[in-house]
Image 1 (cartoon, one colour):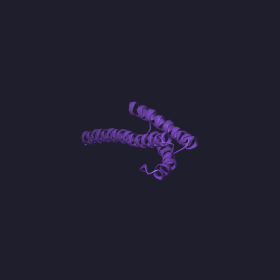
Image 2 (cartoon, one colour; image 1 turned 90 degrees about the vertical axis):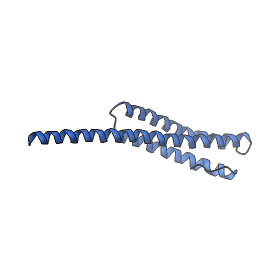
Image 3 (cartoon, helix red, strand yellow; image 1 turned 45 degrees about the horizontal axis):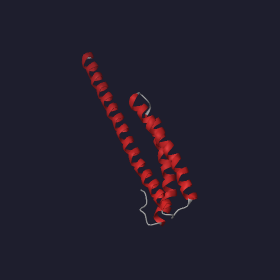
Image 4 (tube, helix red, strand yellow; image 1 turned 180 degrees about the horizontal axis):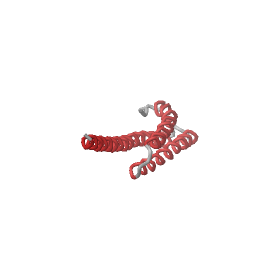
Length: 128
């Protein structure tokens, strides 16, 4: 009976480790995917503002404000990437990554909220 219980515990432990590894891998994969999508939105928005500026449709002030807000996103993005690398290489806490990604989302939201009305005003597609 004791052997069966110990085998059950070993099997349970192996299952939990496997689930933890799978969950950890999913967190890493999904986090990188989210960062990639956000990065694409940022790139499209900055390119849109740059094109509008080159065409004289937005002025220095609007461009500078987009860069300022974009820089907050850029900093949060790179902090999250560094945190995700650390999480992937160590036994870091998943909650730390979630907080970093939350900040990235918050800053991306601010950037999109500023840039979208400008892009739409000049007939460009809104960021999503």
